[in-house]
Image (cartoon, rainbow over all chains, first blue to last red; front, side):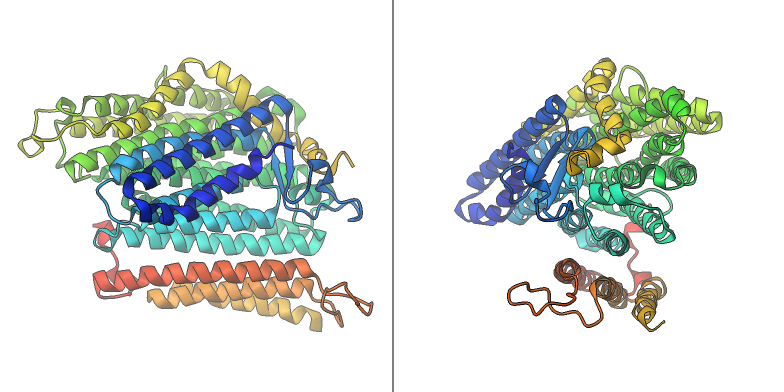
Length: 518
Length: 114
């Protein structure tokens, strides 16, 4: 049994708790430690993803010599150890998180270099990543709750880290409140399932589930709480506040943690409950949440003046696309013919959009951070003429803005096209809304581009120059990936996205990977 | 019927907590509401594992008979620790907000919107 799954948690946790110690020795040592630990985590993540893609689902049992002991022989067929179940969907999320972690940590080295309290900053950053990696790889409901809380605590503390006269704390407070309430509801739902099935293991519960009224309450509580945490309508009000007041590199990581919550919605809908629940109703609930998120998010974004607030509203609207794509998959789960005709493609589009969204939205927030780093303001009315001095940043912005608007040949187009095509067959009305939202997104980013980078050089920004190299590398990596994913979508879909969609659909395969085909 | 009373208490306590969060404008009271919901979650987990006349789940020299469920107790302990961390963090936020804004009333905490 390879140890990458354990290392994926062990390295960030060790790095986090050793960070204040290395900070005592010196600033350079601490920064090198952060980079080394980040590279080690990313390497472990990539090796784990490679292993999953070549060998199939990996079950890692903590405290056992090999995964065959996931179910001890004297436990009566009940998995009692803490298990990590990493299938292609988890691997996909781990890859997304690893890419964003690489870019955001590298970016932080420069963007935070003149701030105080960096030891705590990097410690919390690694805790946040440990929480995300745990959420997407665990196979145990209570374990998921613990990682959710680690992730929320670290995220809230980081969002409020630069107090900024209290406004950042306001954002952090909202995030902490929402995630704690969401976490507690999730815990109550976990308790309801435990009371019925006497286990916390997702695969075991899935193998014995018998959908009762109490399970319905549990599934509703879980979906509502995770939707709250992922920032979809109607609980989206914290996203603009938190995303805009957090440091930019942290916003990029908060996006990944909201993706991890989204992943959990689909893990629960597909792997835990599957066809035992009323898939059409639950699917439509998810689709309607998606449509509302899309539309409300983009219409709130249009009038914003603060560039990070504007981008935050767009992230509400982008989450709608993933909810619609995967919601269509849930809704047609019971109908094999419709599933094969367009359901799988809709799900692939939704899953592909997760990584695309993380890439371009992360890049956009990093660009906003770069502009704030040099100019000290995020107000679109005050900015202007930056295209003369920040050429690379402007180039990256063009790439990211075209990608979010779904213009070929960038990655946003590839995944949105898959969603449009498949959802159009399901219900043309939804596809039309999705396209209108895309056009409104483009309009809004044209405005941002014009007011930030175009126009004559402004006197107050005479001394502004390009951001330092580590920030450019972090942003550049994301920009290159956006272009590559846009140019070769088939390659990505075939190697990463399709296995992930099939892994979600293959409920019995997920159960068998833990229960050994019982 | 008598077995249902703890569950009704859970619903009642959680309801009080939610109402506190939604209706109160004072940040400290809202944090208290959160702690009340957490108490409801803990109580819910504990009563899930309760067995009438059960003994503590320690197998060494156990006299036999029914035992209460240990897993939920471990979950409750974990949740108490997590709850401690969240409450501490939220109260720290409240302190900073009070220092910067001079108030913990949510009506006055609106600088972000401007």
